[in-house]
Image (tube, rainbow, N blue to C red; front, side):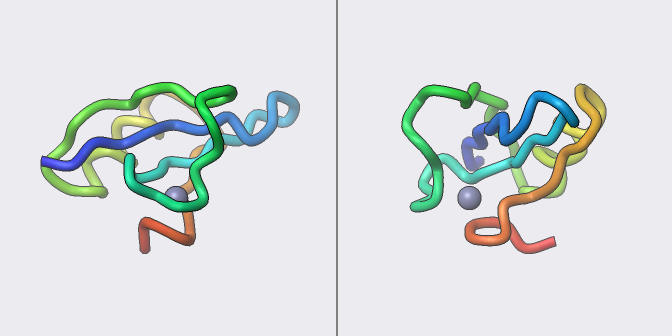
Length: 64
Ligand SMILES: [Zn+2]
């Protein structure tokens, strides 16, 4: 299982990025929230997409 973080990139328009917990591009805690632990990145992204609009995977740590 890997842990994933949701970064709020922009509030208006809503834009979020899913990161792996170990991502080097992940900002400090501000603007991020813990998404959860998932068996693979697709599950994590799917979870975020179900919660929010404007979700995309981080190009640095997740490949779509
Ligand atoms: Zn990342």
